[in-house]
Amino acid sequence: MYEINQDVIFVPGAVHGAIYDFNSGKVYSVNDAACSIIHRYVEHSTVPSDETYLTELKRCFLISENFIPRNFRLRKDKTIQLEMAWIEITQRCNLRCIHCYEGNVHVSSENSLSLAQWKKCIDQLADLHIKRLIVIGGEPCCRKDLVDILEYASQYPMDITLFTNATAFSERLVHCVVKHAIRVKISMYGPSAEIHDKITNVRGSFKKTTEAVQALVAQGVSVSAAVIVMKENEAYVDETMQYVRELGMKCSRYDIIRNVHGGTQKLHAPTNKEVIQKVYLTKPNFKAKKEQFYHNYSRNSCWYGKITIMENGDVIPCEFERNYRYGNILQDSLEEIIHNEKTMSKWFFDFSTIEGCKDCEFRFACHDCRPLGLSVCGSMNTKNPRCCYDVYRGVWDLDSLQ
Image 1 (spheres, rainbow, N blue to C red):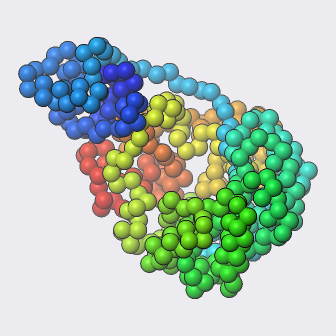
Image 2 (cartoon, rainbow, N blue to C red):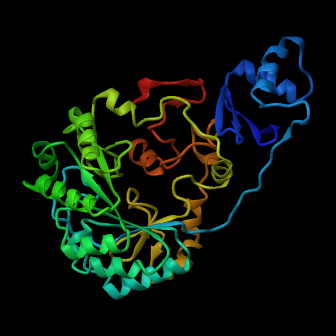
Image 3 (spheres, rainbow, N blue to C red):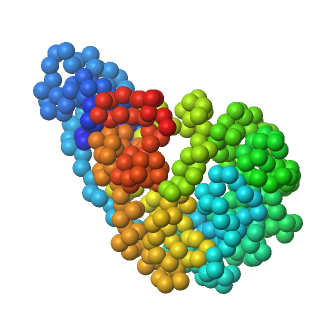
């Protein structure tokens, strides 16, 4: 890597390269011929034919006669900071969604944490200065003391989000989220009861969810939609996105159903390539952020600083990776868990160890998803299958969509 101007970094890849301009926030894709010119420029061995391209770089303020290019080296940053936590307060659910990431069992475990234990957990999270707390299930509303948990967490300076299907909102819960400005994220699967209820397997769920959304929006609650697309609803993507926005929900994009290691989600995978393509990485649409660049150099861009705490106290990387356990809060403190070797091995699992990523020029601007590599490709060391870039051919291969 080379710094070719102040806060402008050139990163060679296997075939092509990229210029990260932290001043403008742009990432420029550079072909192999341009890479050769930049290498000669750095080595002070340019030839006359290079001048046209170098003039263009100067025009874009990517190089300057007043800046001497130099090798760019970073030290691995091993700072440990927990930033976000999901707490799965119950595995019970009142719906039976066909794609559920937790499988077909929707009952609480025998060792589910008590209210007192969840409060102690929240105290520890606050002591570790987390910025975001996301309350999930199962369906959180199936737990009778949900409001008590939210009220307790609200005493701390953390951004709280409740992830719910919103079919069982009580007046007390509505009052709580309004009072404490708790964000609410709600699953929506279609623009009609016919589509939505077919996926939830519970008649009337669409009506209840819609009514809850309307009530929350009317009281000024920040409500966003989680729209998951699968073969059962892929024909209604545009209508669904329009519907949730008309309800007043925030939703910038949808996701397509994710494979979970050992799960059956692939049975419901969408087949419409246009729908899939909007979620996959199919072109170099990156932003140059110094913080992200430094972060990706040392850490996993997905897992670092995040944990999920399950209802029995198990601590895992995220809700999509349930086969790997960092520890259990009934046995060790959260501070001990985030500093242990298991956690460190995942948090600092950077792109330099991932096949198809370690030689990619865009690796310092990319957001990863390790569970997808495992669930789709069978290896934690395989690149995210939603990335269509073949770094060793230097092409965006849309035929790789899967």
